[in-house]
Picture 1 (cartoon, rainbow, N blue to C red):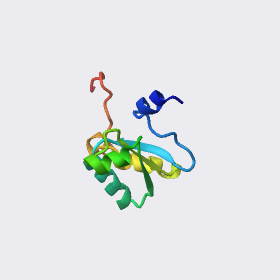
Picture 2 (picture 1 turned 60 degrees about the horizontal axis):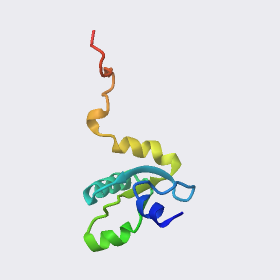
Picture 3 (picture 1 turned 90 degrees about the horizontal axis):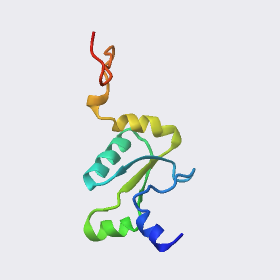
Picture 4 (picture 1 turned 30 degrees about the horizontal axis):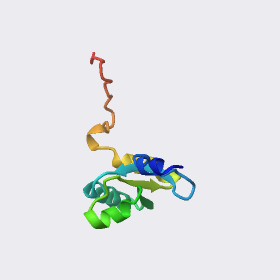
Length: 106
C-alpha cells in the first residue's frame, strides 16, 4: 500500500473482523458520538470505538476528529443497536401502515 493510499483512504471505515465486530455507524462530531455511546450504554450493548487514521491524536490536539470515529458492536447486537439509532419519526406506530413515497392513500 502506498503512502497516498494510506493518506487518502481515511474516508473508508476500518475493515471489520471478528475482533472489531460489526460496523454500526460512523460519528462525525463529538456530540453525535456522545449520543451514540449513551444509547448503547443504556441498552447495555458493548461497543468499540476506532478513530480513522491518526484520529485519536487529532482529537487530543484539536478537540475533534475530522476523519470520523467508527462505532463497532458485536454481530449479535447489531440489529438492536441499529433500532436504537433509528430516529423516532421513522418508526411506524403499531397498527399504522406506512405509505411508500409516490403512492397515494386510497
